[in-house]
Length: 115
Length: 118
Image (tube, chains in turn brown, orange):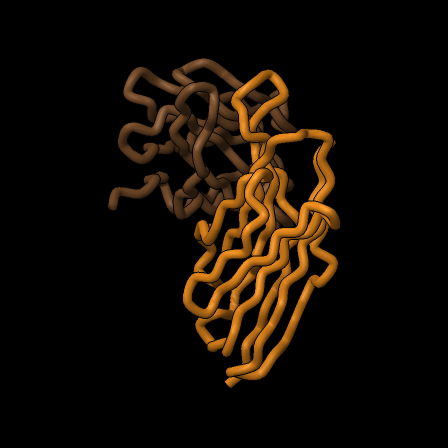
C-alpha cells in the first residue's frame, strides 16, 4: 500500500537560511498535518490542512509557513533558520468524511540539521 | 485542553517477558480517539491501533493487547512474550473525533522507551 512520502529525508542548513520540506499524502487522503519532534521529545503539532484550507494551527513559529496544493501535496517553508529548528519533521495524512477524520498515517520524516 | 501522560519514560525487559506500557489521558471531549504509535530506532512513526471512546472492548492482535478503561481514563498496551524487535519508543496519543475549529491534531504522551534485551 502507498504511504506518505516526504522529501528530502535529510537536510543540512546553515543558520538564517531557508528550507522547504515536501509531503505527498496517501492517495485519496485530503487532510495533511505537520509535526515537529525534537531530540528525545514527543511530536508537536505545527499545522494542518483540509481540502487545501488551513484547518488548525499549533505551535508553529511565524518564520514557518505551509500550504496544501491542488494535488493535496503540502510544503512547509522555514525561513531564518535557527539552531533550535533542528528536529525531525513529520508529515501525516488522513481522510476526512462526514466531518470525521480517520487515522493519521505518518511519513518517514525529514531530519533537519541547522548548523 | 487535552493531555496524555505516559509515566514510564523507560522500561527494560529480557526477551520473552511480558510488559505493559501505561497511558493516562485527560480530555473534556465526549467523543475522541486514542492511538498507539511505535517509533523504532529508524525513526518513523508506525500506527498500531486506534480506539473510539465509545468502544471499551479490549483488543488483541497477536502478541499485542490493549486495555481501554474510560472510568480511569487509561489506555494501556501490553506486549506478551517480548522480542528484541519490539525495542522502540511507544507513544500514546489522543485526538478529537471530529474535524472542527478546535482542531483534530494528535496530542502525544511523552513516550515510553522499551528496551528488550536478548
